[in-house]
Length: 185
Image (cartoon, rainbow, N blue to C red; front, side, top):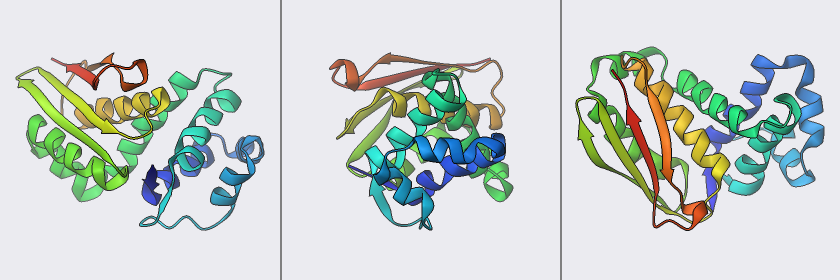
């Protein structure tokens, strides 16, 4: 499975912005295959191996910079990525669009970032949304938390208050889907 370079690029940006004095420490903690990606020029439209371009690097952020709390790290990085992606005209679009429209659009975009993936909105009410990741060739809990953090922040940017995102089912636990339940006020 592969990940689009735009997502890969957000990882060193997160580390450089939030931990500039520890960037080299994080980079040196990566395996050689990941180091080769991050020492080079990351092309936003190229595809990279998901393991060395995303999964290992975000878990390493947790191990090195979050004292082993990779769940907090990858959730925080998902939020950061939403902030970075939803700027300028996109931020205005998110703020003016309906929550369901934003999530519908995000679910279509997911396949542009993760090869061989599929996400669907399966339930939507005024203050509740359920999405299913129905296809993901290499499921990983860190990626699920990263996606949940991104969605949480996107909902906040769109104007939702007191957002709560829960991963209630997971492909990593051999469930048929990864299910994310979102509620807000």
